[in-house]
Length: 163
Image (cartoon, rainbow, N blue to C red):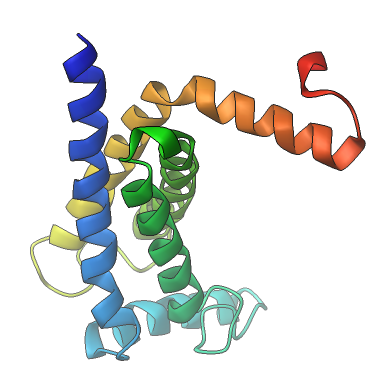
């Protein structure tokens, strides 16, 4: 059982990191597929009065999302080292947040599940990463709660034993 608790999180972390890192080459090179996705999202938010939200300098630009994916990957990979497994939980939470947004935008906006005519591969990958991150959070929930306790203690000056 101990082997399973070590190997499954490592495999899931490697999988999520591979997907995130692979997507960086599209986001940071301004690939036409990335332009299409973020352009559609930007047009949609502009129609709602929030023009520029997904533009290249917007709050949720391809560069912002790519940076968050890079940080999540870093935490997931470093978290494979047993001493740093709490970072794996943080990376999984960040990945879960990123993929929740991605899946929501695919499902509930004009973007759709196949914006690049790839048979929905991008959407399927997002769903698999979301599920993998959720499972990782399940494996690392104790470390996540300990980290939140320490954060609250640092912010509010209380002993982490109170949490």
